[in-house]
Amino acid sequence: MFWKSIEDKSLSLEWNWLQTVAIFMVISNVFMPFFTILLALFVLFKKGWRAIATPVNRAYFWLSLWMIFTTVIAFNPATAAGGLANFLPYFLLTAIASYIIRTSEQFIHLLWLLVFGSIFVSAFGILQAIMNRPDWIFPKVIFDSYPIPMGFSPDRRIQSFFGHFNETAIYLLTLLPIAFHFAMGKVKSISKPQRAIAIIALTLGTCVLILTGSRNAWGLAILSGVAIALYYRQWKLVAGFGLVLLVIAWAVFGQKLGLGGEAVRSLLPEGFVNRIASTIDPKLSDYASTADRVNAWQLALSLISQHPFQGWGLRNFPLIAQSMAYDLRGLPHEHNFYLAIAVGTGIPGLLGFIGIIGWTIWTSLKSAIAKETEGMIGVVAIAIILCFASGWLDLVFYEPRIAMLLWLLLGSMYGLATNNNLKT
Image (cartoon, rainbow, N blue to C red):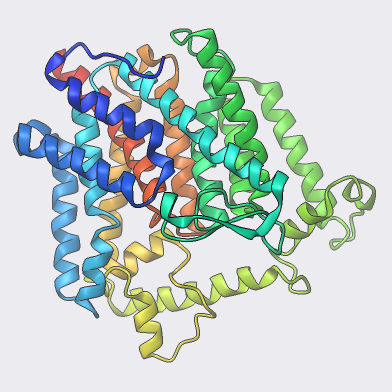
């Protein structure tokens, strides 16, 4: 069930290595990235650059050179060099994954392993909620580079293995559409026990997603439901999601707009309502997170206008703010993935990045083998888009496990499409 063999025996070691990564990726944000990069380097030196030099992978290579160039001329080159670690190793991981994944069976199995691995995150989050002893700290040397409290935060949020609630939320959000597709029985090639495990992953993941208190993820989860319903052509389900969204909006914002909704509001959890309402209501304490984001975005836009071509260097944003005596109100970064790339590598870097991602998704969706994946390529495209959409309000991609998940998904779907095209 867990390990699947590969037709090309020359890649058996690499494929087993990748399966191990998929299952245990969430366990550590230190050891697992190192283990994964070893795989990437192993394949690169064993097979050589020409073996993985597909059009998209060559595009990643040129984008990498541009990022290195902006690092050399950065405001602080040393800090920018550290920022390269958030991109270049994962570009290589994508290239390696696209080389290893050759068949739809591999692709589907890898996705199921990723869903299975998410149960570690969800189960640990549920355990935190049940124990609710935030004064107990899980030994950080076992899993992560930061302490993990065994309970809710002061504002009633759960973080599981991750360093921040939003990271946990986006990790789960990315995998839930895939788990949903398995759980709904859309993939006939998996066994009944595998489907049951996917149902467990979906149920636990949804519960912990709610417990993270991430408004960004909550909103995107609703949009993902609409997107999947559209993908399935379930128009009644689309209408149902739309109705639920309208009712929640009415309950949360109706009273403030003079439209009522108090009765419905009383039926919803108070913490849930206040968390959403605080997005735009300055009277609520959580509104500070919205105001702080807007404050950071204003500086980011100003910096982009000053250096639109070459940028300022990756991860240099807080250093520049400090040199300008600009108060970021405790934020460590731009809180917007796309502004972060534009500030760091200029508008050319941002356009190149978006172009490669768009090219990857489009190429994969229109490939002939997409029809042989039992709908999985389409669902993975939705998952990837959701993950990137979260970047409009946050910046969780510096977390290695989220980056590994995202680039594995991109590499595997592109590899399946590319290797199939080479056969035909």
